[in-house]
Length: 203
Image (cartoon, rainbow, N blue to C red):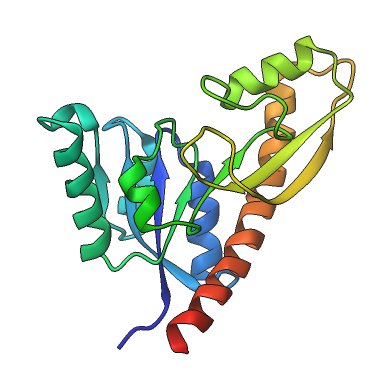
């Protein structure tokens, strides 16, 4: 029986953090396997990355269901059928349903391209964060990884790393530097969480 920690990654776009997670699972850095990729968009390139890695990818949109309860039950059933232990949001732009948060309390994490609580909350993601940081003439920004709860960008912070902002930075230039940090920090945190969950599973 395979006792490896089973990870679901939720995406909405290109999936560069997904690729980083897939690669670090493959080389053993993260003692887990990506068992499922859930996308809020059928056009997300992350679904192609999942297919190329032989990982099941599914499109999940609440609007495709008659009501919220049906949507929640479908997603929970999907996660349970894949025996998911840990959920990582990687550029996922939707709010995670309270029913899913309750079922996986403390085992859903998100990565944010800024130093929370600054530049967090609804609508503050990706390029919008970098634009706001540059516009405010901040001297530093960074990456924050936190536990997901019922409020956007609110849960307990697990790790953060600062990134300098230079006077000549454009949002795109800043985004590239922040993304490099994301690809290192997220696997590090997922490694620690996976090791903790593995111990819980074996005890």
